Length: 423
Image (tube, rainbow, N blue to C red; front, side, top):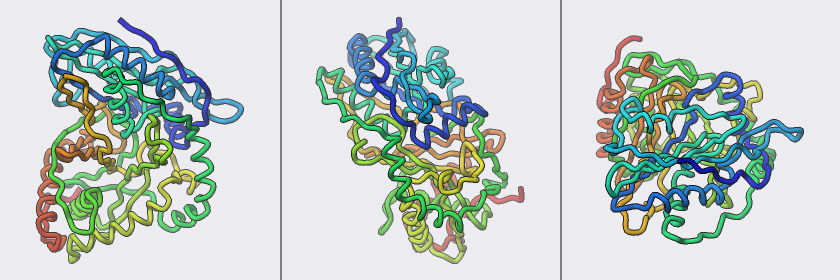
């Protein structure tokens, strides 16, 4: 059973990130690298009809989900696409997925991995899976052209409200592309000056004796883990995590460390909007073995704050001759703290899986991190040809985090010595 939902009510200007994603899809394709899946598991007798109706209402509330990008006389714009489907399926015996997509039932694989037609759409899809008595799992997948990580929380919160019979006010109209264009124009001269002396094309990054070079999109596997993120005085949780990652990469033998970092560009007026509000920028460090972890992390924090000044300016605008890649560096990281509480579906138990594998990776290794009250969830997406043993890397990172968090006065040379070999 399938039902379509309404398309966007008007055209809006595409953002720079949407333009970049669209160009990548048109020129080289990205497989499933831009697929953003989400699973919502409901227990306790959920109503499948009410859930399907809530899905359709969410698309009416967020028309961007029903849009596609198209070239027009005025440039690339988001225009109405094919209706967003809300399917009903029976998938008996399926529980919470573990591992990678090849371990899932075919119906679920199809929802997550089926290709999107970026020219006609739809660029989002819902499927309500009846998995057993009193159990439903909603599988949602969107293309990154219309969706980002924070949008997952907005989507689920709105679904819960609509399922519960509430009638939340729709978010006010927003034209993200136009607003972004105005912000970029104001910051661009300073951003060009800043990056002109700092940007260097990343070379290889050694991880456990293997040289990672890929910055393309490729088939990938995902290792998921839960990490304890220690509190270090003077640092945010993200700064602690990034400093630990850079210290680990230095321990693998990299004298200079460059990682690509996804930074939120979501303005206050977009707080309730589903869409794409993110910018990938490089962060470089030169860890010294004699530095303490605390001193190194403090210095990295200062460099981050410099980059933050230009978080709204895509590197491709600051450096017009920049060669396009799916990832700015072989190793990248995205981190977000969950700003919204877990949703409440009246009378039901709800579990939301926000780090669902999509079968691909951009670059050679990407850390997708979601920080919540119950801990830090990390999905290590990796190219198995470049890094076959992601488990060993994960063990190194967790051990370093634990030791550095316990004693930030440890020198980098005295942190857990990771495996090193000559590539």
